[in-house]
Figure 1 (cartoon, rainbow, N blue to C red):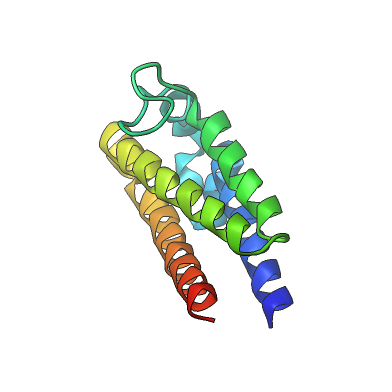
Figure 2: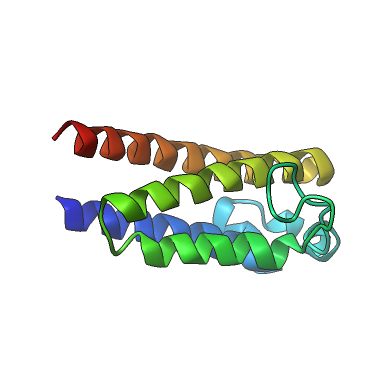
Length: 136
């Protein structure tokens, strides 16, 4: 059971990373029409309050994708401490996605909302896993 959960989480984050990695990735989430808008939208971000990028900004096509790839690899390993670290990363990504929803063109809202939903679902799993570990 645990192995299957790890593989599903790994696949989830690889899919999300691929979806945000380049113009063609938008098609993975059902929005190929966004490909021409990708370079401008993902080219720069002012940074999100509460994250290391606050004030200095970043490039979502790089930083968002790298954090999603990191979670994909992390999902395959570890125990309680790693899940706690992943929870913190997911919470940071939710802040990041909220910032992108405010700054990106409205056309990207469905893609960012789908990403947010996936992150929230995983956060729910992580909170449950951590609570179960603490009880047991």
